Amino acid sequence: MDTITIRTMRLGDFVGLEQLQRDCYPTLDGKELMRVEHFASQYRVFPEGQFVAMDGERIVGQGSGFFTDFDLDNPGHTFLEVCAGLAFTGHDPEGDYYYGADISVHPDMRGRGIGRLLYRARQDLVVRYNRKGIVGGGLIPGYAEHKQTLTAQQYVDRVVAGELFDGTLSFQLKNGFVVRGLIRDYLEDAASDNWATLIEWVNPGYEG
Image (cartoon, rainbow, N blue to C red; front, side, top):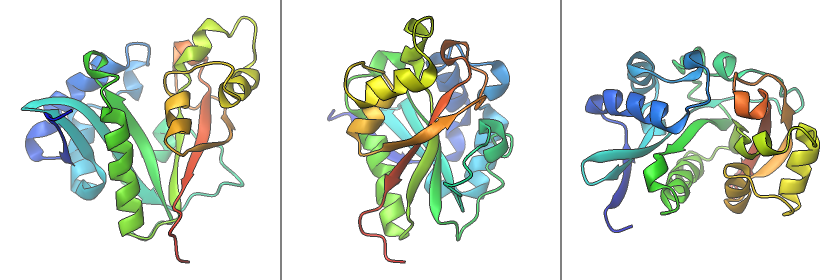
């Protein structure tokens, strides 16, 4: 971990971040992947909210998102809708929540604590700006192995109970997130039949 650093996005990162998307998400439909023009817009709209993990000079992870007013009582949405076509132009500087659009770590670098550092960077941002917390839609890649025998809800319930392990959801739970529900047709992902979890991390120091 000594060589891993977390910093905010820079102008020269866009091509490397696009390649990271392709490396991390082989099952996602192409239109769900962030490309150079998307990262350029994200940088322009809210650079403080875009985090990059570096191993020396190599980009090995990223965490992106924006501030928004999110209604947990009416959570239905798609990834592309909430992210304004991945451009993040719906960013509201006064929004109550940080919407976590994506956290990704290169497959060769997983298990080294990079995801935890990216989550911490997001949480520190939320605490610094006194926002209510973090919300987002979470992939459930492990569901691919169980969808013939379990519904998405049954699978998520068993992961939350600790009876099954999911590479994404189990990690999110370990980092203080809770599942608030399921989102149907969140994005086009063959592994999860387009399901995602609605997750929330609550800022323990929030002062309303």
